[in-house]
Each structure stands twice: as structure tokens, then as C-alpha cells.
Length: 160
Image (cartoon, rainbow, N blue to C red; front, side, top):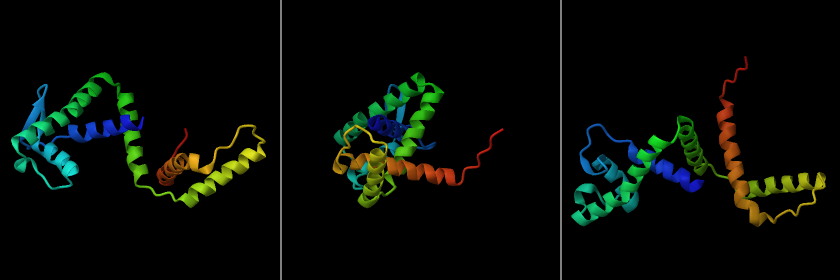
């Protein structure tokens, strides 16, 4: 799922083209602009290379590397329903927001201890995994909760 969301994000990033940009190449008639190429190069080379400075072989490699994203973008627009596109975009947005949220090991341990206590109170027969085995999952869950809590803080919900 994470791979799908990352791919969807890359597709969205690469499919947004500037109005006045020159074309660096194309795939199936879909333009890959110099602006898009420069954005990709900025990430790939940490800002050390631009389209203008890239040698011919490097340009070819870059366009070859960017082509799948264009193809995926075109296929997804054609094959995904509006609801599926919305879900993919929402998932990508959530991943992006969660990547900026910090959860300490201490917060995760407190949440784990709370879950262990609740499981013991419920007299569950399932074996409780060790903290180290579930720490990352707990951190992801806490990050998601923090993002949702922030969204809900300013929500104006009305029931008719």
C-alpha cells in the first residue's frame, strides 16, 4: 500500500506541468517538461545538476526513468474511478502529513503499556508481542491519530 501511495504521489508530482515550460522529451505523445526534469534532477542529484547541464546520455536516462510515471498517470486517469482517485490522493496526503509528525519511543511505549493493560483487563488469551516487535506499528498509528486529531480540531461538523 505504501508503495502504491508513493507511486501515486510521484505520478501526481510529475503530471503537474508548467504552462510555459519547454519540453525535455515525451512518452506516447505526453510531454515531459524541462521543469519536471529539473524537479526530478533536484531530488536525484540533491540540486547539483540541471537539465541544461545534463549531457545527452544523462538526458536520455532521465527521460527513460521518468517515462513510467507518465504512463502510470495516464493509465490511472483512464482506469481509476473518481472515488478511487480521491482515495489514492487522500492516502498520499495522509502519508505526507504523517511523515512530518514526530512520535518518540517514550510515547510509543506509553501507548503499548496502555494496550497491554487493556488486554490483561480483558483477560485476552492471545499472546502479547514484545514492544520492539510492534513499536513501529504503534508509532504509525500514533502519527495517524495526531494528524486526524489536528484535522478534527477545526472541523465544523453538522448533522441534519
